[in-house]
Image (cartoon, rainbow, N blue to C red; front, side):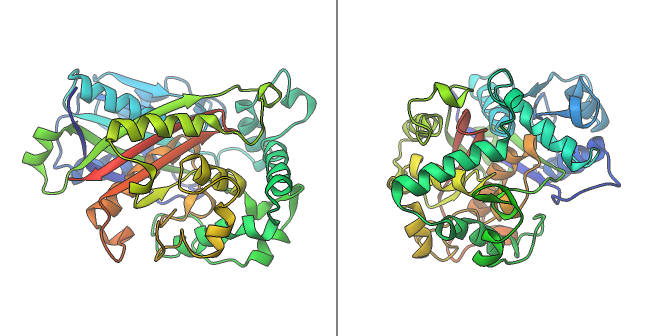
Length: 384
């Protein structure tokens, strides 16, 4: 199996892009990534997208996007695993290059949610749940997150304001991210007193609706070293899933998909959780972010909130988390989110100005999640 590197990164600003089509957003990200990689000849493409069928009334989305981006006639595949689609697309692209099937592969992610009203967008998001046993009876994504959050608070004696610290950190970090959707700071009080959605989940515990596209160019490491002075190795990948239905779980707080995916990625990369220096974690709801920190081995069970409070995960802390602003403030264009996360880690490891830290890290982690622990991907990136 060949070593795989990221040689090109392209991002669009996450926003409600009423003036741009899904094609235009994707083309913008791809053009930036190709320029960053010195315009290699792309041989195949994998595109993360959850719901172009519903948001944009469009199937065959991968063919449309590749054609509009000027890359027609190459094999292109849409990858859909709910909210983890972008991470799954990256793993598919990684496998393509690692296997030797193709040398230069495009991994993209895109979602354009602004073509429907917010209530319709919420219904579309609910399609990722178990319809026959959950949504048909009125359970929403916010309701599922509320069940998890209430149980977490009870079991570990954690207060809502402590969980809100992750959203506050996200917003603080997003101020310096030119691609972020919500570039302003918030107070813990404003988070817990925001409009209630499903007690104890308020609007400010949730990632916003937004449009965005992200793209990466992958190639074998030996070729990458001839193209760029700063290739970023995809050192390890992992993916796992759990039951779609929440009632089928032994423990609602056991997000084993994250843990199993992380174990695979750590093993492939030859590292342990303690070796991670910076991470982009999936926090469509703040409670999922805290659980992710614990399942990834970056915090013990029930201790993530206390570590947030002590500044452990702050930009100048021991293990900076969500320098991009996370899903809560960078935004969450569903199918693109996983690609954004790995792209942001790659930029941090390269020391690029947008995500520059006091010292340039060598090893970073990106983690995605679909629903309440249904499907998760973990990617370990290393500066070569």
